[in-house]
Image 1 (cartoon, rainbow, N blue to C red):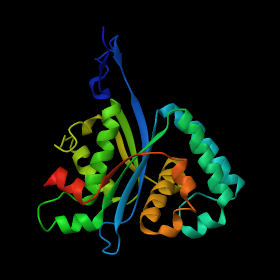
Image 2 (tube, rainbow, N blue to C red):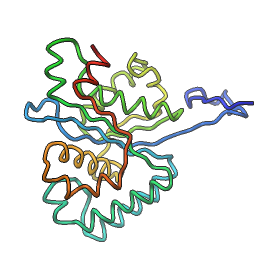
Image 3 (cartoon, rainbow, N blue to C red):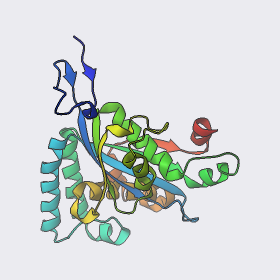
Image 4 (cartoon, rainbow, N blue to C red):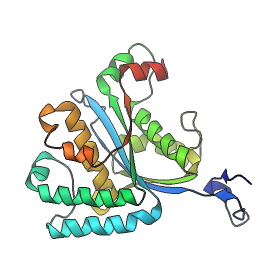
Length: 241
C-alpha cells in the first residue's frame, strides 16, 4: 500500500496512527535582516534553519559550548563582533556543518524593497514581510506534515502570519497554515537556532549591499547552502500582477 502524508492535526486521542502513513515533523528557527519600513534599506531577507526535532539538542549543546569557550553570552551578528571573533564564527560554522549531516537545511527569501515600493504604485502587493514568510512556510509545509516555527522577537514576518494562525484560518497564500503545530517568538539570546539564522541573514544582506564583504564572509555562504527565493522586479510582477 502506498504511503499517504497526514497532518499531525489529523491525530488525536481518537485517531490512531494508521499503518502505511508517514509523519514528518520539522522544527525551524527564523530570523531576518533589513526593515521594510526603513526607506534606506534595499533588501529584506528571511532565513530559517530547519531540521527534525532530534537534530536540535546536539547542535544546541555544541553551539553553547563554543560560546562558553570564547566567553560570549550569545551571538548577534554585526561587523565589530564578527571581526573580533573569527575563530568563534569558524567553529560555529563547523557546528552547522555537523548538523547538516544530520538533516539540517536552510530555507530563505530575499526581497528587493526598491522593486516592491515601485511596483506598489502600479498594483496591489502584499506586505514585503508576508511575501517572504509565505515562501518559507510553504516550502516547509511542502516537505513536512507538521512544523514548529520560532521567530526572533519583533520580526515583521511573524506579525504577518500569527493573526491567521491564532484564528485557525487557512489563507489563500498559505492553505496549509494550520499544519503549523507551534508558532512563537523567542528570545534570540536563549536559542542557538535563532542565532545561526541571524548570522546567515546578516551575511546575505551585507553581501547584497556591500561588496567589500563578499570575500571576507564568503565562507559563511559556502558553508550554509540554502534554498532561496529571490523576489526582484521580475519575480514580483510574475507572482502578483
